[in-house]
Length: 340
Length: 92
Image (cartoon, rainbow over all chains, first blue to last red; front, side, top):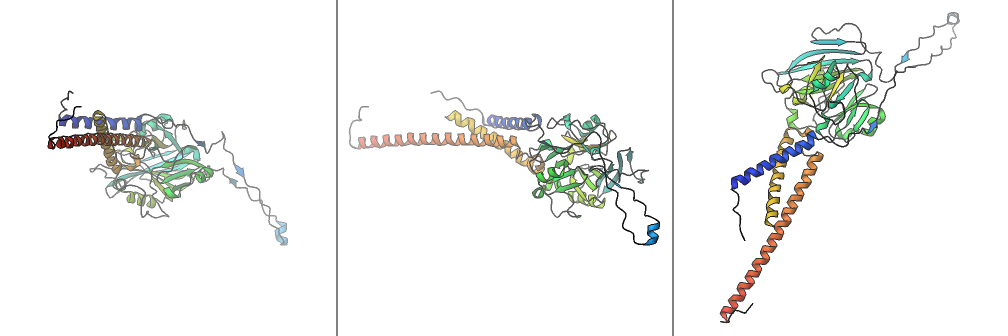
């Protein structure tokens, strides 16, 4: 029987290393390039008619009068106060001039008001976009490629395609196979993974610890947008004592976060980082402190690091680390309506 | 069988290298789900299959080798007995 001469040892090691590289390439191909087969939405949660309707409360009956003088001059009928439809924030939508002289950018129209300010905390530069919307449909999200699970692109490209006035990188849902995905009233994925943030159709926003979240309850309540990255940034008005995330993510990093004040009033926070000569970023605790000091009732961390990016009227805000990264979704205000 | 063992040995090394890399990446960014994605589950399954195949091949090879050595030991013992009795070796 002929015995072949074995290959040199170093060549065998090299071939194994090449094999490992090929396996990593195949893994990345399936994870990031080839779209998943389950792209159909699971459920329509919230939908809006062509014209919003308003309910008017009944005129209250005048109280019984026993005083003769009162009988001579009947009390005027109070003007009925209209009850705004859920998701209509006209009653609280501000008008008039912006009162922040330090704003680096402002925008106002009948349905949207945005004011952006720049701040610095312990070597970390961050930007706060204060947002008022008149209607819940003004709080929009968009997918890269315009469809669920259809690809990745720079947040600035997605924002540009929708002519967004203000945009912020989302939770990059496509990088994981689990996590709640609710966009513009449609449920796409209902598996729970990490802390969750839900914007309801009535304008309220709540973030939940992973163990506390109930998707059925959120759907029944009218979840309009839902994100899964986290962690939750405010716990009963305080900085949380622990966070549902890794040590690497807790450290100084670029950040993207969303804050909630009241129905119709929100803020987007973008933090520049990993640039020692300019901005080292914020830790998660510092981000929580920022959101609390801004007066947010609730706040939630979105995908940070190189993924985070904010745009305002077509311009990139700040200096995203390495120019940003292609991601799968954005939050945006103004501009065109979402395609999906 | 030796070729079979060689192939699955190298496959096991490749899969191990893949998951060592993913484990390190997961430490830096667990949000990406490097170890929990469906693709990872498939690769873990294939890894397990290659390890099982390698183990079965190794066990079969070991048993074959053990049988062979046992047979040789029996032959050696028979020869020793024959030479001690000064008998001619039996015709096969």
